[in-house]
Amino acid sequence: MAHAPDSDAAHAFIQTLRDEFPDATHHCWAFVAGPPGSTAHIGMSDDGEPHGTAGRPMLTALLHSGVGEIVAVSTRYYGGVKLGTGGLSRAYSGGVVHALEGLPIEEKVDRRRVTITVGYADVDGIQRLVSERSWVLTEEVFGGEVRLDLLIPVDEVEEARRVVADRTRGSGVVDVEEGLD
Image (cartoon, rainbow, N blue to C red; front, side, top):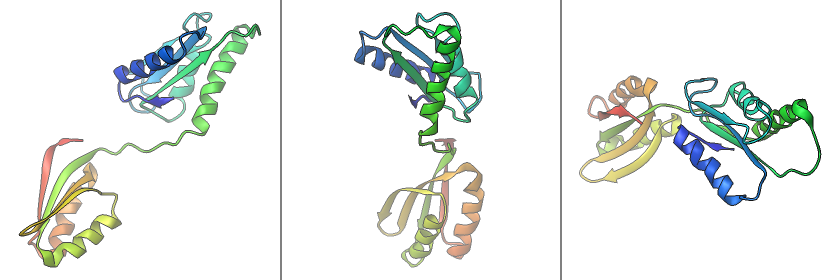
């Protein structure tokens, strides 16, 4: 499994495994390259297994997992054991479910780039504020004033303006970049 923010990333990962294991009989795969459960950007392949026995069960497991932006590949070497179509479907979907159980996941948060500029008298209070929140400090620059470059969740930007103004008695400046990260 790998992170797949778009279908190009999913296909690149699939190709990496094909290149790493060129003698494998099958590289069955499925991906959800969007939010959890979304079918806007999905893909799947049985890669030579009987139709509907690999890619579809893998995709179904991904779609019901609550995880998005993900690709799963099952690389198989034929070993002589005949599972039948039901057995194949259970094996491929079960493999995805099993892999998902141990998968570290992280909630995706849309953030804005924000620059906070304050005087030295206020920097400690703003640094404490940053450490109390889910804000990501990307850079601190100490010059005539202190500039903190941050990534702040979109839904906290207005609150950041208010809190910085309160903590700096109106002297702190909050600049927000227009685009999303």
